[in-house]
Length: 595
Image (cartoon, rainbow, N blue to C red; front, side, top):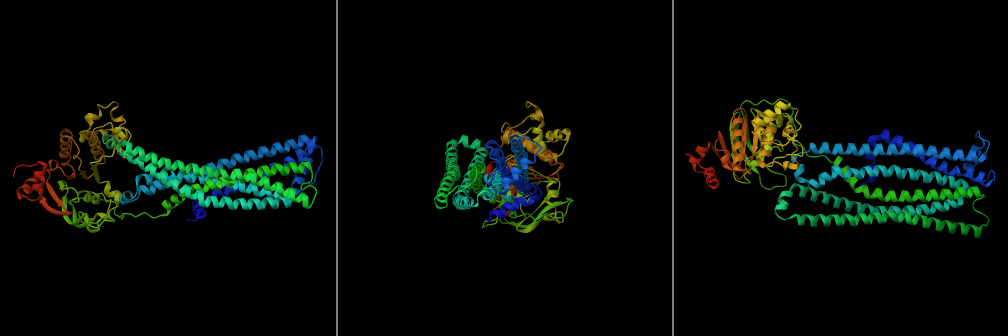
């Protein structure tokens, strides 16, 4: 990728901030050069040598001391030097503030933009990407961008400083300065080679290692209960150690290579300078720089020059090390995401039924349809159960009803309107969804029921009562304000499910979908949730997705799936009398009834 183009992509969004920063950078570099030149009149005053030949800039600074309203020349020179240092410090503070504000703003807004993009991405996007990779792009990669946006202005400061000091040196003695410039160009070529061949590739490997680390941590925390129960924690520990060891290797390698330019520059520069001076003295004779004061300024300028070149080289390598993360962010922000078709209707009208008309669906990168030519209706105000063995297509039907996907063929109608014609948010406001794997986050019971929904305390309690959750909630240590831990680990499975039902009811949806909501519960919890479902069925359209048929025996209609097709429809009794797939499924699960 073209790194300058990528960096410009981030800079141009904040043109005002970075234009001001560029102006301050130039002023800061000029003041750095002025600080070096301000040593000249002070050295003159100490040595009592008067004005010396040191080039136009040094003579101008020396003349500035002469027009100051201070009679003692040493005091005047000291005041000038102090003022130059103070002014440089104030500008440096302004520069640091602008750099910090600019990089902080870019990082903050980049994180927000990536999170917004992910929040609007289709469900398939999250299936196709590892959680650790997505988390890395949101949390860690922007830090590398922030560091780069710090290092580039710092590098420019040193680059401008080098340029202005070289101008000052050239006015003192251009021949020696040309020799130094030659050394500098050769050294820049070395740093450029290292940054391209070593730092960039090391940074790329470090990015991958950190992504793998984050992925392993995410996996471990998500499945910690199962991992501990299976005595598999050692395996995750070993995997994490392996990835951490790789990151450590790359980190050490990067730090060592970054230190090389700083070590080399001083040795090489001073050695070659000595060689140049010696060669000049032998071939030409006489001093290179005339006057002790000018020589002091030249030596001080060389010291500052070496320091600036060393910092510039180190930061160049560090910038190259952050480049892979910045490229990753650029790709994340500029690559278009696939979308589910957004409808235009904002008001949902649902009076009669939801109908599947010859609906088929093929998941991306799959060879066989998950459901094929499915046709049935879900009447309003009734309880409809969808049952079938694993892999029969139940989850796919739920995904289509939640508009996580659109049908590959056919259509889903709400009354006479294609579901895809509605805006997704308008439709989903009419739907309450309770899954088998209930999502409970680390917050209070109140927060988990609200789930971002605006509601009064009375409405929350009413929803909890309807979900048969109020009784256990008020017995918790802080009642509705009790914090339940990550994934609700302080609650039982039945309690988590009842909180999820209260969450769904709080929105007062027209349609309630229970996706295997009781399949992992004990008999007591299942009975409580079945009672809640029975009560809700009097005022809502309820869709039950189940594998265990004890949940669906009282449904008004049961739809039986096999191999992605509808093979039977009817009531529990009717389907048992037919002796078909439903009856066989009932026999295997121990659910019977009167025929």
